[in-house]
Length: 540
Ligand SMILES: Cc1cc2nc3c(=O)[nH]c(=O)nc-3n(C[C@H](O)[C@H](O)[C@H](O)COP(=O)(O)O)c2cc1C
Image (tube, rainbow, N blue to C red; front, side):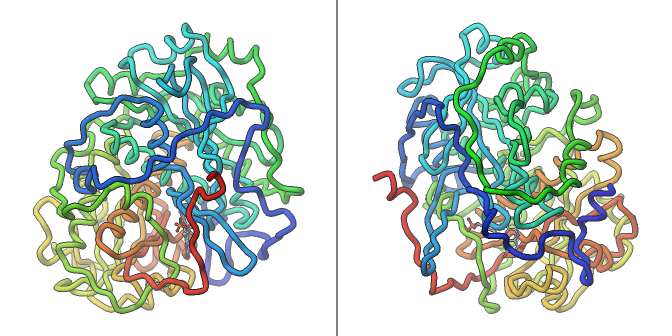
């Protein structure tokens, strides 16, 4: 709670950072493990099928997990998607977005033998620049058998870790929050990429962080550039009751950890920066938010998402094309408006009840709701709206939000979608101001703040849930990015905002509810000075 308070941006005082870019210590965006065997992956270009509608509407047959499928899984989630060139500068962009394009999230694969890729079970680090896997551990068949006991034969696991230093280099103390947003984006990116192969994702929360670090071979790293364990995601061809039960109880088996602890992983982490600036409060919050033990029974949501999938209608739009072309708008045109039906379709895609594909992967009761500044949606009154993503929270939200009072069901709101008009008005200036004066928040079709049920769940489940709240906002953001892309507009995540100014607009008077992430979507304006190059010309 102290970390959260002290890293709030205020109009008169931004959260502590260097305040300038120290180019001499700029971190290398690519972690590598020189010395580890490298297994190259195929670059599987997007095809017309599956369509974007099929992702959330269902009906994608499960493909076998061979080299082509694993290649596609990473190509559609954590790979490079383009290079940008401006004068002498050149930088890469990825399928998953990242605050400041600093990419603190690292991806891992834990899998059994995979046809065409590896004969041996192993733990692999994903290297996006090479689009290849670095093998850090080979697992013996018995160990792999232990790891996937209770799961279908072809289950595999994707792990995520964060290098806080990458974000802290630029953003200082607030960086821990941004790393967690990025993890949430990556969870959704992996979930959706798996869906494109007909597979489902489940976040595994039963294991303590230290065991995860041991399995992923990051527990021996030292210094400020260390990777911190975040999560493990199971990928399965079909979700059954047994699979859900396995997901809730899965732990890294102690025997496997003991075997690995006695061996050295292949490769040594590369050095990312010549020098560093320490941000002690990040270590403090990271320690405080470490998961020490499995969650209590109350943590698991008995009502998983996706009860009534909405019926998206985008026609023959290629899902993989949308996923790989996703881009943040750097400026909005201040003119484009979207249809009301489009707006509602985007909102249905971020509600757990109508999007089990993404939000069903998160096992806790959804805790994040949206306060929306509607600027330009045809046939919808401009104003401040609230989207209740989880109906169980409606009455509670009415109490926690004491400012605007209308609470009228929004015009034309589809049945079951909890969108309420709180206050009519032109909020373009307000949205801009609250988002650190960024024009994109006022110039889009709408902007929003993600409001998390905060102090209650963190106290109930434990401080490690602080990270999960950010993951939920990141996953939500990833869906919004794709929805905007599919609707022919563009979105941008906004990590820079004045927390308590947003709370004041809503009359939020305590830490029961906190704004954790802002977003905007609208007609994008391209920067003509930038040239775009293909993602993997360097491998040709
Ligand atoms: C958590 C998060 C916070 C972000 N905050 C901002 C922001 O405050 N302002 C902004 O213009 N862009 C913001 N972005 C967009 C990033 O700058 C963008 O994702 C990054 O440059 C990579 O570009 P891409 O999204 O086109 O791949 C944010 C993105 C994320 C994921």
